[in-house]
Length: 345
Ligand SMILES: NC(=O)c1ccc[n+]([C@@H]2O[C@H](COP(=O)([O-])OP(=O)(O)OC[C@H]3O[C@@H](n4cnc5c(N)ncnc54)[C@H](O)[C@@H]3O)[C@@H](O)[C@H]2O)c1
Image (cartoon, rainbow, N blue to C red):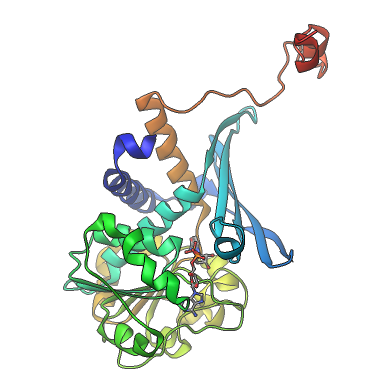
C-alpha cells in the first residue's frame, strides 16, 4: 500500500536522501552496532539465517532477521533473501513496529550502492553492467537510475533464464537492457563505467568476472559477498582500487575486504560521505564499494516506512505482547476472562 501511494521512484529517492543524511550525521557514540551473527545449515540446500541488531542509544533497538536461501527461487518459489524487521523502545522494551524487510532490504541495498556510486564513480559514467540478475539486481539498477543518466545497461547471470527475464523485471525503468551470454562477459566488464555484482556465487567459487581491459575509472558495487570465503571481485582489482566498505568490521569477516589487509582498505562509506573532497580523487581511479549490509541502513529504512505509515494512515496497529493490567501477574488477562479460550465460553 505504501509503495502504491508513494510510488517506487519517490520511495527510492527518499531512501537515498535519508541514508545520505544518516551517513553524513553518523556519530559512532550514538549507536551500538555489533556485526551480525547467524546460523548456517544444509536443509537440504545451503541456508543461512542471520540477525542484524542496531541500537540507537536512548531511543530504540531494531533487529532484522534475514534468511539467505539461494535455492529458494528455483525450489520453493520464494526469494533468496527473505526478511522481517522489528523495533523496540529502549525505555520499556515495548515492540514498536514489525515489518516485512524483503522489500526494504532490496531498497536500502540499492540506495547504498547509489550513494557510493555517486561519491566514487567518474562523473561521465553512463554504462552500467550487472552481474547476477536476481532480486537485488532490480533494485540496484533502479537506485542507480535515480543518480546516473544511464545510456546503456548490460546484464549477465550464470542462469540464462534469469538473464533473459531481467529486462521484464526492470521494464518499469524504461531503460534499454542488453542481455549478455557467458562468452560476452569480458565485453560487459570492459565497457562498464559502473558495475554491480549481486550474485549468489558459491563459497570458494568467486571471482565472478575477469580483471581484463577494465576502464581505469571503473566503479564496482560488490553486493553479493556476505560470508567467509564468498567473494566476487578479482583480487588484483581490489589490490589496486580504492576499496570502500559499508561496515569495515563486518566486511573484513565476510565482504571483499576479507581478502585484504587493513592498510589496503580506502575508507568506509560514512567517511567518504562525511569528507567528500578528501576522497574525490577516487573518481579517477578504480573503486569498489564493499557492501555487506549494515544494520543502520535497516533501521533508517524501517523508520521511513513507519513515518509513511503514520502520515498516510496505513499499517495495522497490533497488540502482540501480553501486557495485562497487573504488570506483576502474567496470568491476569486470563482471570478476567480476556483469554482467547474464555472469550468464547
Ligand atoms: N550487501 C547487502 O546488503 C545485501 C543485501 C541483500 C542481498 N545481498 C546478497 O546479494 C546476493 C544476491 O541476492 P539476490 O536477492 O539478488 O539473490 P537471487 O537469487 O535473486 O539472485 C542471485 C543471482 O546470482 C546468479 N549467480 C550465481 N552465481 C553467479 C555467477 N558466478 N555469475 C553470475 N551470476 C551468478 C544466480 O543465478 C541468481 O540468479 C546474495 O549473495 C545476497 O546475499 C547483499
